[in-house]
Length: 422
Image (cartoon, rainbow, N blue to C red; front, side, top):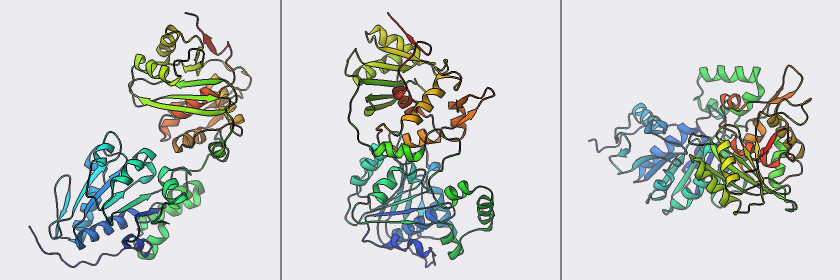
């Protein structure tokens, strides 16, 4: 095992120099592709590991295996620079001179609690931080409490309410440094390859929206055929209104797959409660729904009766919740001259009332509400994009939005909601 540290010149663009400043507790670099954010922070961590003994954590929201982490990037840099003072196992990187070690963890899928148990961490790098949930941030930050410890975040924004951006850039705590860095920094440093330049120039010439998001790090823009305005949706998440009116609950149902079960409660136009679960059987879902409504059997409960939701509808009626109403997304619209089905009409109704309602501030909800698209069918009716087509465009199932849509839909009508009397 080599116990000597070879002298190597490692260049980093000037835009990242504050990454070495020990005064900062939180350091954020965000922007578009090709800006060397990941490579620069990786180099910073390696240099810090060579200078003194550090315990370092490289994290991202989802890490099912070491292949999902920044492990390979670190190895490539070590080998590329010939840093002979580093050695590595299948899960860890160690500096044989200073004793520094680097580990790799995911923050979600049950690993957040393992991160919570870590002690003695000096440096944390969260890559792809735009995907990190607010809950994960709440666990991570207070866990890293060594004197002089630092947290690095690198990301390309998805939308205006990415939790990491809200927490550290829009409402920065003390000792926080943030900087937007784009590909021009890599060009000045001579790190921007021609293959990326050609791709960037093509996007700039042919798709300004793609160019703005991918290369300039701007949030995902809306298509011309988006149903709900992002500006109005964001305003609804800042609005405060009275809870004047009846309580109505909407429930988007899933079972054992990856989609979420989501409950949504409003009083009048004000959202007063939400809940989300995964992988629950019908009876478990009904137990949770009973608890959600506070066992109030007079409350109107609207359930997505399409697919597995039918069993929940039947069970809730059996338990005495007489105001349970089954919603079928594919059933006939009330105004069937304009809309081919109930769910299309419900989405456009939400677009109409979004300027008056109060919704919770939630980045996933914002994304789901403002990226669902519509098209005119061959009969001149406005049809909302199917859930399958929406997911094919790279989005997860819009379960939060669907639950809110059900909850805020117009008063139910016999033509589209079945009433049961058991």
